[in-house]
Image (cartoon, rainbow, N blue to C red; front, side, top):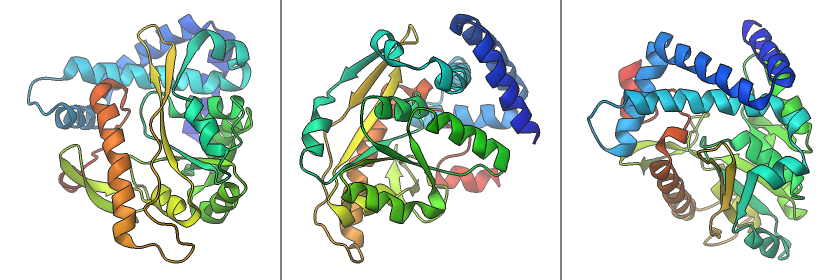
Length: 293
C-alpha cells in the first residue's frame, strides 16, 4: 500500500504543476534514487557496460537512466488529463507509420512490439489515440490498488488492458477481428520464454509475440517512442516481421525461434542506439541474475 500512496501523491503533484516543474522535481528525486539505491545503480551500470561493451566508468550514463525513468513517470501520470490531439501535434513526430494502415488493410490485425525503452506506456496510449484499436498485454502489479491505478491510466485513452495470465484468448480474438495488440519483448517475467543471445549474452526472451503471429498470421511491427533532447518524441515503426508459416495448432519451436531472433535484433539495435533510454533496473542476463541471488 505504501507504493500505492506514493504513486497517488505523484499523480496529484504532476497534475497540479507545469510539465517543466514536474521534470525538474523528477530529475532531483531520480538523482536521490540513484544515490540511495545501490542495488538498482549497480544493475543499471552492469547493463550499460554490457550494452556498450566497455569496462569504463558509466556513472554519468547511469544517472541519465534514472532521470529518464523519472520523466517517464511524470508523463505516465499526466496521460489521463494532459495527452490529447494537440499534444500529439506539438510533441510527437511519426516515422514510417504509413505501413501500419497498409498492414491492417490485409485483415489479419497487427502486433505492436516494443521494449522498456523511451516511454512505452505513452506509446500505447498514442497508438490508441491515432485510431488503432488496441489491446495491451500488461504484467499485473503485486499490489491490487497499484495495478488498478496503472490500468486506469492506460484505459483512460481507450487502451484495453489484459493481464499476462489471461491474455492468450483475448489477444487471438482481437487479431482475428483485425485489431491490434501491444507487447513488450525485451524481458521475460514468466520463465516461459526462450534463452537467446541478446546484446552478446544469454537471457530469457518472451515468445508471446511469435506465438500470436504464428497462430493468426498477424505481422509483428516493432515500434518505439523515443525521447528527443527537448523531451519531445519520435514514434518510429520498423519494418514488419511476418511468420514463416501459420498454424492454429501447436507452433513449431524452430519457427518461433526464427521470428524471435528477428525481433530481438531490432530491439538490440534500438537499445544500442539509445542506451540511457533503456529503463532496466534489475540484473538482466542469465549469468548476472545468478550472481545477484
